[in-house]
Image (cartoon, rainbow, N blue to C red; front, side):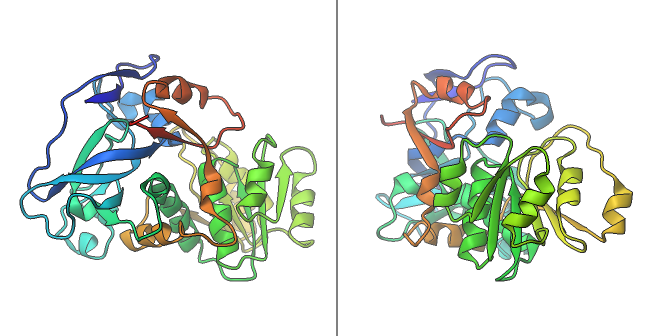
Length: 337
């Protein structure tokens, strides 16, 4: 089958031929319909040693597809089913897995393989798409699940004011959930205004461009007061500290941004404001299922995250282009195009 293959640091992904996977015991074989290009995939190719990425691997973990074969022991899925795939693989038997939290299984691994025509994974990692939700949209379930987990970790209550720092796909998905779940003020901030219209389409009540007097402008957009919750969705050194500066006293900073470099912060400022700093990563399977249900319409549609669909052949070029901030948001790869 054709796949986009990682070769080495500093080299773009290469489209080539690899062995087509087979459905082993408990597994299903998917014909990949769409796979989203994620910022963490970009991070992986920029620091392959840190993430354990080896030459010849096929990455891509935000994917959906059609079941075309099942292995022995599969009981809930059959050929023809359309599913969203969760890249979180656990043992399936431990207390964490039984709670629907495979990310905390001692045998946890993050699987890729979505930048290809076919992918094999365990049936417990798949959720069948309800009628009316297409496999093309199903690839959004993974980033929506990540954003929803951040909202749950924040313990956000209806009527609160929130600020999302970073207008990438995860930040915009957080804005979608915050508005959907009752936040009164949902402000998105970014150093560029490329995603202003997209943020408003997804439910943001205001967009603030970073710069001078940012704290005052954010407070004004939040009804005259600093936000009670600030979500850090960029992943650059210094931004947690920046969010502590922007949040209200006794507020909460929730960190979703993936930063692999050492960071620093003014701990005196954080303690003097009694700020809670909460880390958020991955999602639970119930949250993944809730993300799938959110794809079925509503006032604010998460499909607004999608900026483009590209073929597998043109995917490496699109992948490299996303290393620089543009008007692109969530780019989906269509291996059948």
